[in-house]
Image 1 (cartoon, helix red, strand yellow):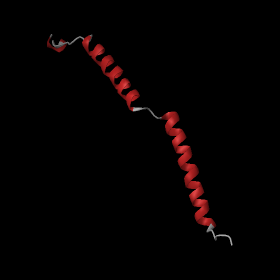
Image 2 (image 1 turned 90 degrees about the horizontal axis):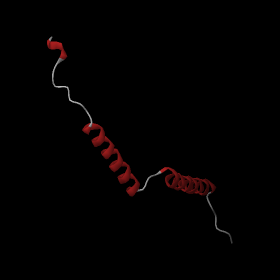
Image 3 (image 1 turned 180 degrees about the vertical axis):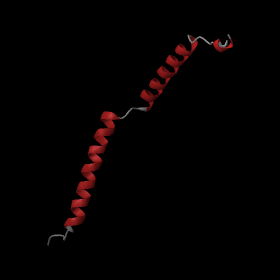
Length: 65
């Protein structure tokens, strides 16, 4: 004899599995690895240091005239 299957549970389980598969594909497509995040942060920090190093500090107030 065949096993009795609750169709509602079967459909929900199938939908969950499909949703998880598409989520995994999106994580692979759009996500960044730990190394990529570290590299991006390093580049951003270097750029900030570069810009800050070329910043001119204007310590004198022009309003004193």
